[in-house]
Length: 219
Image: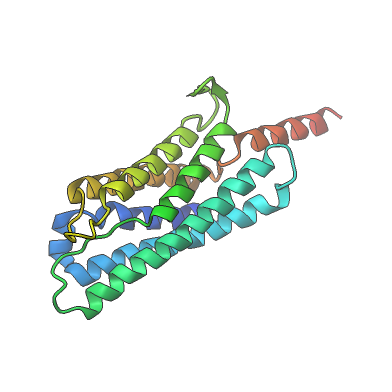
């Protein structure tokens, strides 16, 4: 197990928590308190994955392409910390309030913004033809899938906003579905890294390393 695979395993496990947590059937099966714990556990796993990702990006933070990977990793890690706070509050409420009869998990706005910025940085650093990803290279679609997941989480944050005057959620169903869709995107990227052992957060940096190794073989 490389650090890349451990990172991907953390992200995959966290994504699974966010994938199943919003489904009403899951909450009915395990109970609201356990559902809230699922979200918090997922956020902690995201934080662990983000820490590993940042450690992997740190050595090359000043290399060509490495700067983008470093910023994407650190900003995403900051977002996971915001999600830690949000999901902990939801879990604490579910475990301590006897009148809490349903889980309303609202992604923290700051966490969602961090994910969006991180995903945009990683996608911008990936091989593209204009706005479209460049096909052909291994894992060419993963930066786009990752960014799509960040967008779904952003939509979920907006849909899950609680109106102060009424205490109601703008659109709980939309918040739940977009949370699951975003988690599915992150899970797909994480599984690809688990199976290949490669991380695609810095495609340009990976290409630089490939060229360097090719040059060494020629010499």
